[in-house]
Length: 338
Image 1: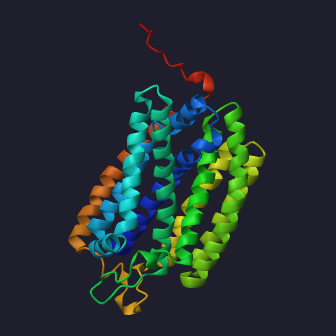
Image 2: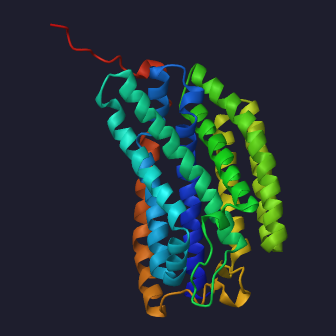
Image 3: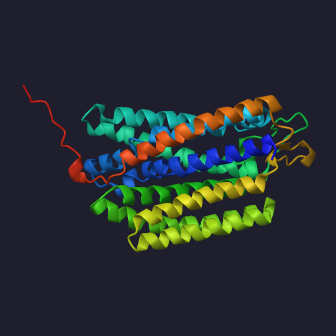
């Protein structure tokens, strides 16, 4: 297998890890005002992702860095053409990260309410725009002979792209609700499980339409198989949730998101960014790749450090594996009035 194909597959794996892990982060953040009924329950929800959210974001940093090093032409065209959506995602992630750090600094309802809004919108915007971005990457965008994007923001906001955004939005919300049900106990656990089933039904409908549309556009027999298994996994997860099996339900949404991303990359290969202007202008794993020496060095670095990173992140999830309930949240100690 050529190293260009190996690195295309590795980048796909990095995006699978990012969407599967950060996806439930986004879901928890978006559902903060829906599932929580008071400040204590909001703290319970935030604490479910508190130890892991920043580690989950490492996946997108590595995916971006790997794209830059392995496929510099892809990186240049993608980040220049999708500049505004990616900038909005970056700003949302920064604001969201700040909210986790600063929300608890004051025992003031107004202060916390504003940071809660930052968490909600900082989760909503990336959950929507990542889907829009990836849908356009798979479907293709106008690229000229100089490998430059010639469209505008409105070019990306096409029906297929917007549907992709709605799919990631609803899938991440379902995934987040499943995670809350898995990680909490008491009333919020049951509310999250019920909500996951309701949102999941909408996500399933949207996903079926989107994946069928993708298959009709650029799909292959391999991507069709992956998409079918992804759909079955989502159905299985929803059925497990209705029976109170939160662990299997979360596995179902986790596998669904992972397989959906894999299916998109399978449908995309060997292109990395198709051109709708002229297929001859499309970026592929061959014409967008770095030198063979660069790919060889990167491969050895990945072989050494990837197991270390995976082992550390797995250890983090193991340490913080227990459920959280409202009785675990301490009552704030207010200063005596003098």
